[in-house]
Length: 265
Length: 276
Image (cartoon, rainbow over all chains, first blue to last red):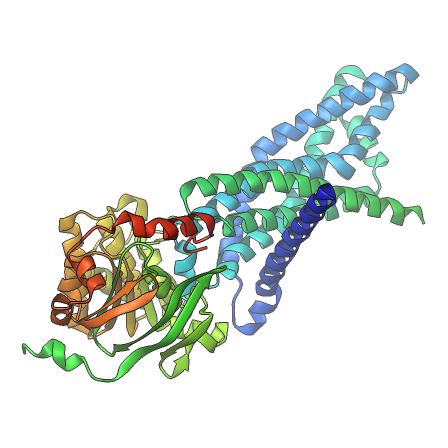
């Protein structure tokens, strides 16, 4: 009885949390798509600077990580493939697992670490120092001012970063292919491209847009619900990272399943 | 010229509060507050920690919604208007927060210019001029390009006042203007409030627990205790009051601890965080 009560409580809490995220996303979307026609201009400048911060500045670390991931994938798949003397399939194995799954996912994880946490910390600090209240008393909507630009930036930058991550992953795989599997660079990349269908790339990119929305919603929501006191900012930041990772994986599962059953027909 | 400050105070009420009740969750903080703020006067809302004075201020600027009661400002009841109507009112009021609440990622100049950029279609050059003017009024000329983190506490508070003044508000609100400042700097901020009153005949509402500051700047004082107004009046009336709680507050007599036990227990068991 007690257990059922607890499970019920957690489920209700979880749904309430998702509801809060959806409500935040909805309000941000209002200012992105309806606001400009209702005399509330888009803050492109802020969106662009957010995109620089969340996107362009993430390139070095993302490149390094996904290059290694590509290399690891090549090594792991080669371990199995060489038993069948099928090392030339390394290229397609790496290309498909990068574009369909690991490119979007690793990008999302890196962006959670860099930007999701930063959103929560930035907005949380503003909450604690009454800057959010100050915006409201100046008749500036905090969602319009702070959250919408972040959504726009992330929805554009995550797919871009993912494309970049996919290419770096393929390059990482190519390093193994050239060193160990008698590929030349050009042949390896050709083999990767041949293995890919447009569908693989597009499903990965759709997922990455959803990841961008999830990460922004969680980061901003955690920031906005920060309580009083500096230590609460730390709590919000931690929660933003943990919840984002969980929800990104959940969204990943939902969309992967969706694509699986849709492509069956 | 000596009646200058008196001329500004007319009998017309700028803000009228009627039986205002505000709660955080289950806990009622303000239990039916009523008083008027006259046009052009400086009204100090005085009260101890946890008296509800900050909640009252937050309600006046529309950051909290009252449960019941009325706040009349410019012919509108703030307790019952829509968010967009409230935004129109907010453009005519200025608020200086306790810690300044300047945006840390913007320079002082950008902070002050922000409401102008958001709500007016003024040219950048015009905004630049207004910006210099406002910073001059608070004694911060030449600090446009500083970041808030490079300013001292007192300067930050002045910069916040400049930002509150940017839209030429009719009413200016101050939350604890001397909190966290040393006595000399705090006196400077009091001086600034007096200057603003003299220069613009603005209606100024100050929330504080500092007695010295309150008696220096106030035309009238409203004393709040445990969510109720226990006294209102001019400085002299307050000083000569015989109300026991007023005397206790003004004479700084410590609370006998025993009577607080139940309140303290209640405070521990209920969610009463302000600003949540």
